Length: 150
Image (spheres, one colour):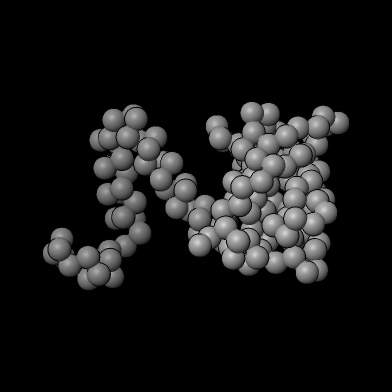
């Protein structure tokens, strides 16, 4: 058996079956509310590593249409491949939506289509049909970071 305080050595000497068994044993001992918190933390951690592009904070109004209904929300972050929208009206996961929002350069609104890939109590995440830079040749999300992250 390896020493508990030598984590790098322990990791290299442990097999996946043992890791899974130990994790399950610890998880089963947790109270239900702590299980939910752990699940959320793990899903957030897994979600951040799955992202294709880094999200950048960007606050702007957005109009989107789903099933013939126009709805207003607020963008909280954006990347070349998607964004997170805060709204009381939330489409179902998998819903295709059309959206329009102002780019940081204050030019004409950007019009894009996307698919809702995640819905939570705050709002929903959208993956763009076309990458933002492909849709707007001169628009680059680096502009967003220059303007909003100082």
